[in-house]
Length: 227
Length: 227
Image (cartoon, rainbow over all chains, first blue to last red; front, side, top):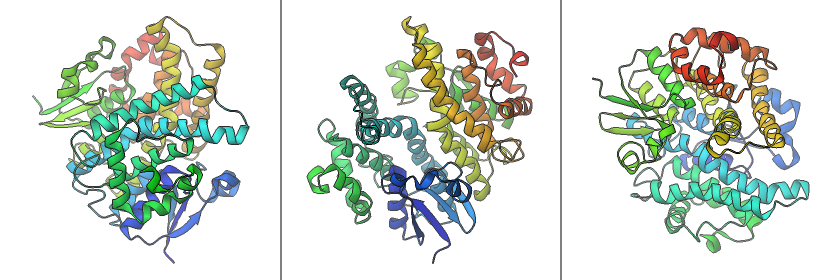
């Protein structure tokens, strides 16, 4: 058994990103699935022993507890667990990937997550549906960032930060895939994103489909139908 | 003249954080002030030559353009420009600071920024004030994260990630200071944050007060009155 415990739920976008990255890297880790739907992260025991912020993903590396997906990625890269092709070690190249990872939090991530949450999750939990006006506003915020992915990040290259797949693409794809569950089809307006998502999936499979099995199921379409 | 151009506006929270970090580090840089209030970041020239995302802060290091404050910090740390005491080089210690920097984006940062924006900036730009209900909702979201600063991050130590000041404290303080301008007084509910802000200011001065001169002026109180 590996001494690295990985706590995750494949319904969580950054959990899926790390899951794919760990599998691609051939890392050994102990699967610790946390069922968010059952509130397993909300117990006092979880707060005390696993993650004081009561979220996933997080790790326990032989007693060292760490939260936040990007911090975990960087820690494991420094330990030599992540191949350089996925997360560059040379600081000038690494900064390009970091630029995306830092950009995405309050742009792509928050707006895709809010769209998913308000349209799919909240109605499930509360029984109340959002107004058309609210949906339109959330879609506009999200598409402002999808526009930047299409027109800026993918302007000149096959992947977000250059000619090859890095962790930036994996984090971004997992955020965008989440919106499938709220019946958003990113292919309609965004041909570059559509083609890039295919490349990301192809480069990451079979781990990409394994991570997204539940997302595909909920959205009612297989990966082929959508991508 | 230094070959590092630093583009910033002291009205921007991460601009202030980098300004303080650069000054504390004794770094040489060329001041490139961008007046957001005049839309200087919205021109085609800015997009083409300075930052394709049309935001500050950003840098141009002898031709290498980089955006996103945390990515810039890591890049300059790798170049040896940031003292180890402010941003640790040993990966286990660095991960603790990274954990905060990654946590803060969609928690402390976004909620403090939304509070400031909706209560101070939007009324200035549009002439319309938010409803009491909206203000209350934003305050609640922000305080959920201030609670975590007070009860989790500052639970056991003088600074956010340990016994001494790091960049994590500087980024966090700059986000919280922004809410002064929307007349929010963090001292009322949060005694630990109040004492910690004093320590951060003291550890960073005279650069902290230089960075916040405009914030103090807008909020109508000097630093002594507030902290």
